[in-house]
Length: 384
Image 1 (cartoon, rainbow, N blue to C red):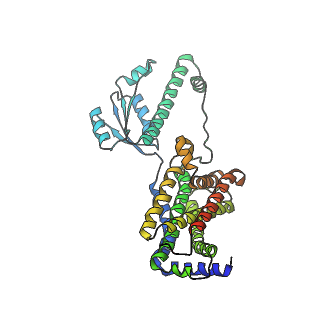
Image 2: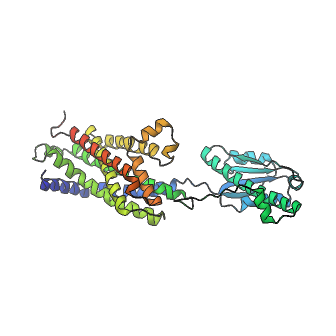
Image 3: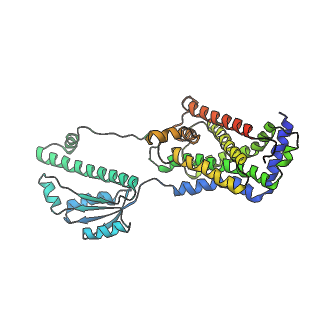
């Protein structure tokens, strides 16, 4: 392989990229725009749930119960309603997502040591959203119930309030959140969105760049030159690899400084894994460019091949371990899952190669296999 010829091909590709202002703008802005749009738009935190109450008791104790909804950051208390009919109308129009209905004699029954059923109506249109809201309501209700039982034991048995609380809850659950102590959705989503932006942009730019030469006819100059297949492919892809490497640094900076995601790992490992992933992406773009003849076809095929599997099977929205067995098998057939593991491990857990070596090895295998496949499909003789 002649490095001078490789350099010549790479410089030619760079000049072609710079000459096309729109393509150059797309090369550097597309990943940034993807991260901005999805980073701010794909919010999975369930907070400020619109809730209202129908309080038939209107006692001090019922107001104390509802105050827990008013002062919680997870709920947006919209006030009191007069009847359940108003609740139905507001739930149907999505002005409310939940409603709490406190029955009559709520305070009297509790003071008598009896149980009371508080009805909660939830909008089940979005099951995941609803299930999380249900968990919040159960937690608030358990806290209130524990307070009442403790006060009752203290009042009837002469125990101190602290001792009554201990007896009311003999098994106390202590939960500690690791790696994402504040349970911020952006801390988990943004690293995965870096993967998504690179996986969409790298194959797309490579495929469009090569097919553009097919349409203009300039690719046929290669067929009559002394440049070998390896030299052409190496020089051609080097430009897109360099562009994507710059995008890697830009996306990392956006994740850390714009979205305030902590980075606890080794930047060198992160960058190396990112370059490998970009090589996988450019390899996919190369294969697409060898199979289609127009830029429109390259655009459609690349978006389908890169975006759909990445969105579904990378762990971007749902952990791979929570998928069905068939979906888990498919997830392991795509490179996005391995790179997502590396990103979340580097950003949130601070783990190194001793933990992520298998994911890095998978990216190496994907990169080499796609390069060999592209080399095998590429020919210096024009196809009829």
